[in-house]
Structure formats: C-alpha cells, structure tokens
Amino acid sequence: MARKEFKDVEAVSAVMPGEGGYDAAIAVKAHGAGGAPRFHRVLDGQKFKTAHEADQAATDVLARLVDVDANGELVF
Image 1 (cartoon, helix red, strand yellow):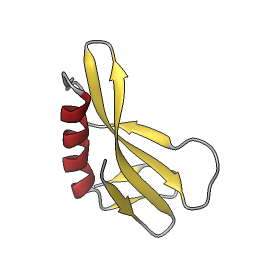
Image 2 (tube, helix red, strand yellow):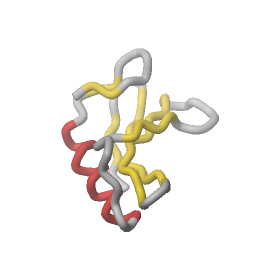
Image 3 (cartoon, helix red, strand yellow):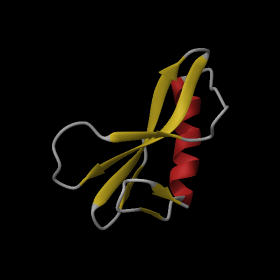
C-alpha cells in the first residue's frame, strides 16, 4: 500500500475484490475525519488475478495523482 498526502486529504492505494478478480483503487479520506474512506476504482475494465497485482497497479496510478478536489474526486 502506497500513501500520498495532500493539503486536506490522504490518498492510499487500495484493492477491491470483485467478480473475476481484483480491481485497483485509490482510497481518499480527509485528515482527522472519522468513518470509512471513499474508494475510487481506477483502470476501469482491468481485472487482476491477485490482490498484490491490483495494489501495484493502484500504486502506479497513485504516483500520477496530482490532487483531490473539494468534492473528493481524483485529479490527474
């Protein structure tokens, strides 16, 4: 799991199990906020056989992330 800090939020690479394998994702949570993070599936249409492969793909996407906007959407 990779992590990237921004002014108001933290983004981390994540994995979402799904039908036919795993999806790469990025989880976003505001600093100091309670509750669950918001998950964003990335690399639509790509399924990975293992969670490790999906996390590596999410880590690669996270490296390209520039910011998270005020609505919690990813900005590349």
